Length: 396
Ligand code: GDD
Ligand code: MG
Image 1 (tube, rainbow, N blue to C red):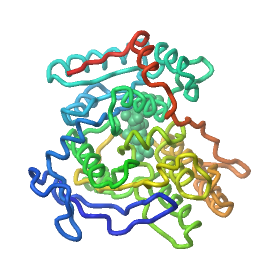
Image 2: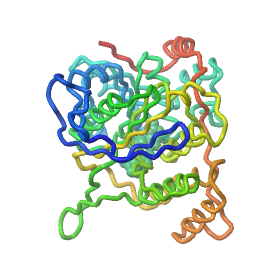
Image 3: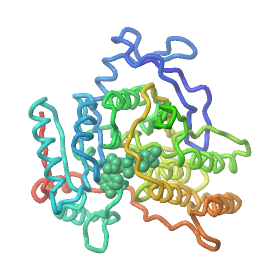
Image 4: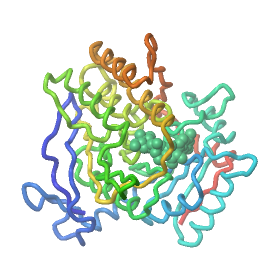
């Protein structure tokens, strides 16, 4: 892959937030001179280096109600050497939609000879394994893992760590274009290759999110929620630096990856607020405003990269109520952050009330938090899980 080097970087404590980088070539050939800057502005990551990183990467696919056909397309786009981890919250009655996906995955992995894991997030065996290791921030009142996208993703990261992977990427199950999925993973690996820190996050910025209109296809650039979340995340940074910025362009990016070393230190916010809160939490934890116990990460620095795709993003349209929930959750996690200045809180309330998403006197709901899992005994977790859960694992 050939990409430009970040043109500017916003530094916030130990965190470097790089501006959006563009892809010039999706495949830049083999490795002579790989990983080195070709000029002052362009970097080439060769195929060998990308493959090496893919072998150390797990791709987590959270899935709820999507059709099997969509999932099959996504699976076909994940590079062969990555471990695929599906964390499902699909309904099990009247038809067991989890079983359908498990059977399809089993057939696929045997057919193409690759490694994969699938697990239902409300599995009793999974809850038992989490209880055994004392990691209790994912449970609901039934003693099972709560429903929610973030909850599914965190289970996915635990499974990636359990499998000994160094990196974990996330890709939604409702992507219509397998070639785009493949590009996301190449972007993840290229970002990891370019980072100078072991604590890295790479976020995908879509070039277009096309919509059908009466006059044909319209290639819109901005998502309805992400534009607003980006604006408030940028304001949060500006309040501290004193300089307005537009560095954040991937506030809601579902497609992103992290090194496990970073992922295990983070606190997550539940449901759909996970992506914007990842940025907020990095600023809270490593921004130098609040003390942290993670001195090694402070010493080595956190790098957040944002890379714009070549493929447009086609996914399922889930309707206006869903967008409203996502907007309130996204801005709510900024609003309730301990580093959110009072003036920004007022602006968030004003914005959400202006859109009639909150009424006068109402505040965004406080989202549940998911604690860091660095200290979880992953071997003990694996032992219990392998005995108890109705997961399916195929290893090549
Ligand atoms: N395991 C699991 N558990 N997966 C879930 C759950 C859950 O409770 N809820 C949703 N998912 C899965 C869906 O099946 C889908 O594959 C993925 O998470 C994204 O959910 P969507 O409902 O399709 O969300 P979206 O397309 O509106 O929003 C996506 O893009 C946003 C940026 O535009 C999400 O990735 C958002 O988190 C993201 O901010
Ligand atoms: Mg979607």
